Length: 393
Image (tube, rainbow, N blue to C red; front, side, top):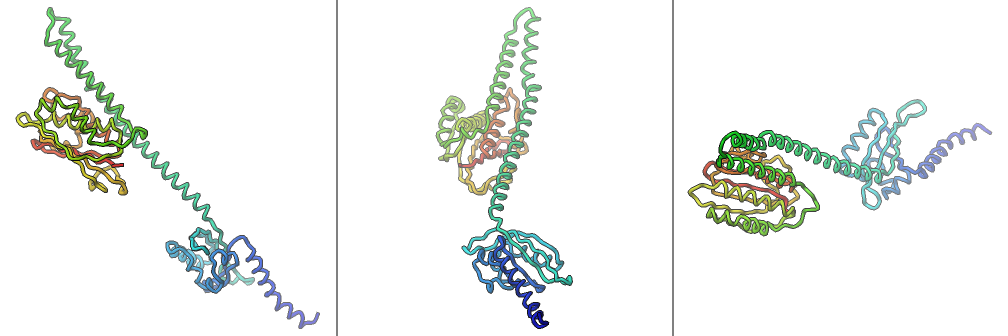
């Protein structure tokens, strides 16, 4: 072969190698791009062009960036430029617009290129569609988030149950022991004395009745649980009507005036709504002024998102109802507005206002079971208003 023929072959060899590369790149199962030392892309394989539905001329230079999702563009550009300047390999994911206009997640792997003499020549990158993988990851994240929420709810319920157990322990050591102590003392008085004292017998009976009431109320409190199967549409007007009928004698004896606005229908546990209204109205009648006839008014408003500084997190997408039970009774000091909802917490003596100190604790538990909150507002001698916020559905 002549020297001239060898030179022709040598000149043709790079062209042949480049053509072979293009053929391999176009048949590769991944999208391939190549950029020069100026950071601009000058080659995209057929896989890339088929994915984007654009021509080589449209993608040339920075044209390819037009297909990157706007929310991913700045991050994508920062990674590309910073690694290019450092001549470091990179991997990044971003959303790229497909030929049909939809954005799909791709994983882009860029690697620096060097000449045979070790000079930096730019980057070559390969991209794969990871949309399905991303969808699986997002679904898993949603599942994990949901399970985390459920676990946190379970932890909160456990903490609440532990607190209630502590309160029950307090009841056993104090409120339940006191009636038993009275029974023992007056029983010994009867046994040691020559004559049976009617006063001692009455004291024993009174202590026994108080202990029975305590046990019944504790049992009612323990039954207040959240069971999704028990929730249904509840017309609060019907609930209030039933409660007013139950309290008919007390209302008549007190000469009380009970009024109400039209109440909404909510999704709730009917029996627990009845307990809520019964306890609140019973309290309003009990803690009335001696010289003034009790007045109780029940009203309700629809609220989109309760505007209150509360510990409970409300869902801004839900509609809520705010129910108010207001009376003109003896009221209480504002600093006790939270204490009154604790089990066995009383602001008055049992002799003057009989009761077990469980009613308002039961009310709070009912409201919490319905993912709501209850507040008390009052001042001495000016009545009290109980505000209950509940999801409507």
